[in-house]
Image 1 (tube, rainbow, N blue to C red):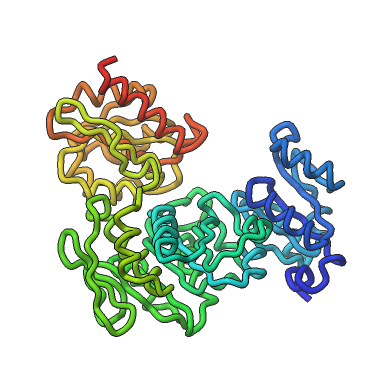
Image 2 (image 1 turned 120 degrees about the horizontal axis):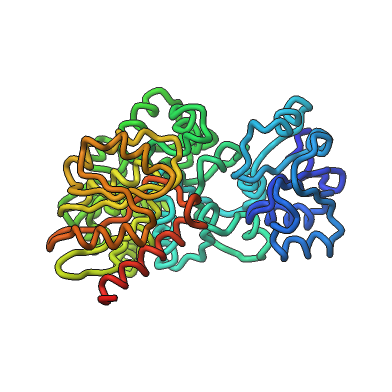
Length: 462
């Protein structure tokens, strides 16, 4: 009997170790404890760094935990290990547990085994959060009770703990979560795009791409796969992949498949059955990549029988999440855009390719192993000047020095001031870093807020 089957059938006789105490780890601990499992926690962080609510819960429930590192014996002596997404899967303790026959899954794989409602899963290098939230709002507009979570911030296990009775669960899924998803089988799976990312964790781009493609591996004939037909990487891999689910393609042309296709600047055609339907997109969703995001979300909503009028209402009411091509100010004909969520090369490419005016680009941060030279065509076409910050600035300057004028900045605030001095009427100052934020900030959101405050000082005349 595998560890997960033992949890489901005989939880009281199962020793489960949760590795990592983030949101998903804490949710898994509480869920497993409620089931009656014997649980323990292992975390590399020091006790002083753990969440106070978690520490209180561990004490109240007399749960064993270790901090400051992982013990080999605890890992190899468990029946099942729930590993948090941030923990590399090749650490010695996990390798030893694998050799000892211990099953290793993630919180997503655990929680999904207990779900009794349809699940829509969204993955891709870029656009996951926008599409996940948009699908949730379209379903709600159609009168459905919806749980929206996963990598977006609320673990699936928290839904099971809450007692909420939803009609549909919409979950954002990262590649790290897919690597330990076990038998996770979404009724509807969306793959938005694949471009280089997280190459500091994966051995190769091929490994990263294979992780994204795995969202389809457990689907059956009655399930649906929604696929970006314009993404060459996805389409090349599909030609070599055996898939059971029905395919719905979105992009410039849906071809002979069902799906969605562009029908003009503001219109898209959608076909999920026998009828071709036309939708008019509101202005914030008319430009790429938001147009493609909207098409994917509309297909998912129609597959869940959301009426057309409800979809129209949901599209009109949708507000894009912060830090994603968000206009935060304008002065003297210059607009300032916060795209701090663009933490990889593909996201910056999409941002630049959607621009219709000259760009002063602020980029840099902590590198993720990608090849910055992939940005060259977009930068040559769109970027008049570039300001670089953070740990990766030298590497970026070396890769892109021949494509545009480049200057270093000591801080994000300094970069905004320099950009404002350079900018002319009709230009856009764009923060789109192509890097993680952790060298200078706690998160991409904090980086975006610092950018906004710096812009407000410019716009306000400070």
